[in-house]
Amino acid sequence: MIAFTSLELQEVFVKLEITNLQIIPIDFLSLPDHALMTPEIKSLIPPHEKDTPNYFVLMSSKFHFLKEAILLDTFKTSHFAWLDFGISHVANIDNLENLFVD
Image (tube, rainbow, N blue to C red; front, side):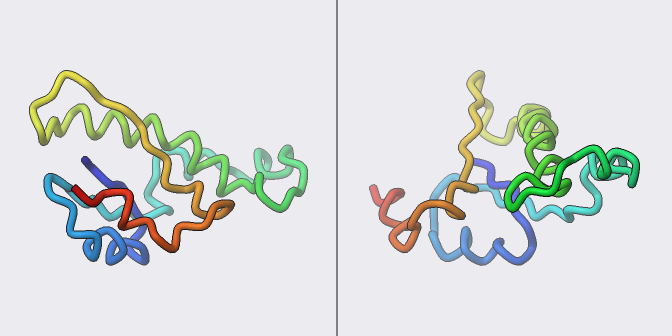
């Protein structure tokens, strides 16, 4: 598994001690779609608690992350999938590490 994560959350993945995990820290401001979020574009997005301009940048960046994982091909596989751990903002993840216990 490859985990693209912010520097702030990198330690969460390290603590999980998952075998076959590659952690790739990302800088949000360096995401390709971040540069596209001009003030003009931001003004088109109605104010909403969840659907902020940064949210849209992150959502559109999923394709960038998946492409990077395919290009890295760390695990020499023919299958790739996206698992979104962002659900944590609406779900209880207190026992997240239990999901990965062998």
